[in-house]
Length: 303
Image (cartoon, rainbow, N blue to C red):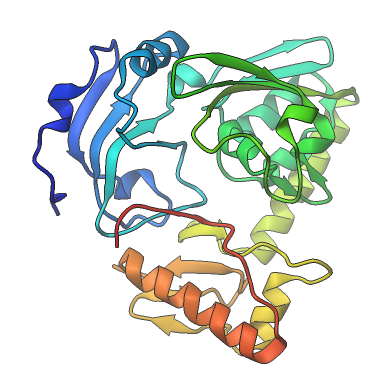
C-alpha cells in the first residue's frame, strides 16, 4: 500500500552518503513479516552519515530506528517520516581485554559468539536474545537469568541535533526492560564487561540456552518474541494460559500453543490482526486475574 502523503518529504531531506528509499516496504525487515511501508527508509553508511543527517534534518520530521525487527510490529498504515535501518556498517564487534564493544547493528547472537571465541564469559545470555545490541540497550534485554545491566559499561548515542553522547550506568537508568535514555536518541554502540573463562564451557552454556529456546519457544515461524512484559512476581505466559488464551486466533494471528506469550503470524495476518489479538489477550487476562499486561513488543506506525 502507499502512504497517504504528498510525496515531498524526500526532497527536503539532507544529502547523505547512504541511501534513501521512498514508500519503502518494511514487512520483509520485520520478523512478523507484515505491516505497512516507511514514508522514507534511510540506510546510513555509519556514524558520520547519521551525524550529517541529523545536523541538517528539520526538527519536525518524525524519525524511527529499527534493527532486525525481532521485537517490532509495524502497523498496516505504515510509518510516517524517516525510518532509519541500522545495518552492516553498525555491526562491528571489537574486544580489548575483558571489554566487548559492539555496534548497535550487531546481533546479540554475534556478540555472544565473539565473546566465546575470545574465551570471555558473562555474555552467553545474549545467545537467547533475538535482535541487535541497539535494541538490547534500549530495553535492557535479558534472558536466562541475566540482562544487559549486569554487564554494561558504557554506550554511545546520537541525539536529534547530531550530538554524540557517552552514557554510563547512571545515565542509562536501567530498570526491568527499559532505560531512561530519551526515546529519540539512537544508540550507536555499547561496551560490556566479560569474565575470562573456558571456551568449551562457554560454548556448552550457549548450546544449553539455544536448546532451551528451541524446546520452549516457537522457532522458525513469523513471530515477534515475547509479547508482554512479566508483571512483578508473575509470569506473563502463565497469566495468559490461566486465562484460557493459549491457541486463541484472530484471522491468521494466533497465540502460540508452545509458548503463549508469543503471537504468531500463521499466514497472511495483518498487523491489525496481531495487535487486536494482543489486546484481546490483555482484556481477558485483566478480567481473569486483575493484572494488566504491558506490551513488550514495540508497535509503530499508523493503524
